[in-house]
Image 1 (cartoon, one colour):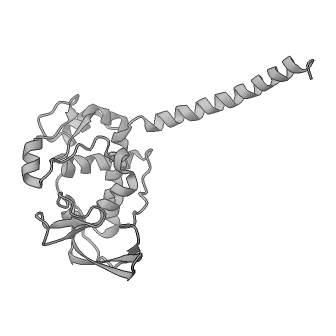
Image 2 (image 1 turned 30 degrees about the vertical axis):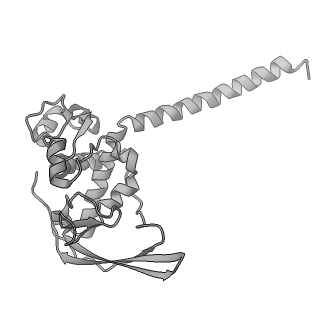
Image 3 (image 1 turned 180 degrees about the vertical axis):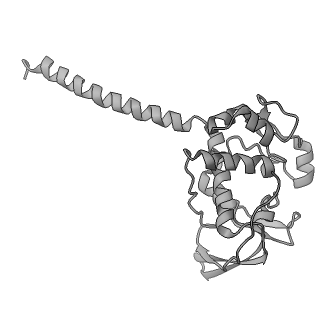
Length: 241
């Protein structure tokens, strides 16, 4: 499962401008897409779970994504963990701090704390930076401690940042260029990140879809009830009016 896929197309030079940090792209996620969620779970356990845990998410909860317990054990549990265990990481906070300067955060609710758009843009905007201790930096999260976890898929990129304008109205420009190719082309990599973000958002609230469905039913019932309540009110007050 750790095998990477496909090849990358030449990444075009893109020029972006922003007055308030790097512009976030809209994350094209769909919480009802089970295939996307399954793909995101696979990417998570292969590329994220080495350093980041999800201590509030149990492996057997992945059955909600249409997977059997056998599929989860055979394909998504890469340690000695049991099917009912939480998705903990073997890396301790102390070791993580010594390696990266800060302990890698737990990702159980990262989709709620950071938002899908932020995560989607963040995971696609790593670039090489020789001044960084890890050799990597990020356009959305400058001076980030984490190296690019998906660099073999995306390839290596460089980013030239310039500032133009007048005092009080400075525009920051971002110009991307390719250093080396990855295992996926741009569309394939964006799809991989989309699926991963979809799963991260799902972990933050696994019952979100069912909760919204219940909310819709509840609103419908209240709407019907309103009709009867209004009719009762008219009948009760007809002699008064």
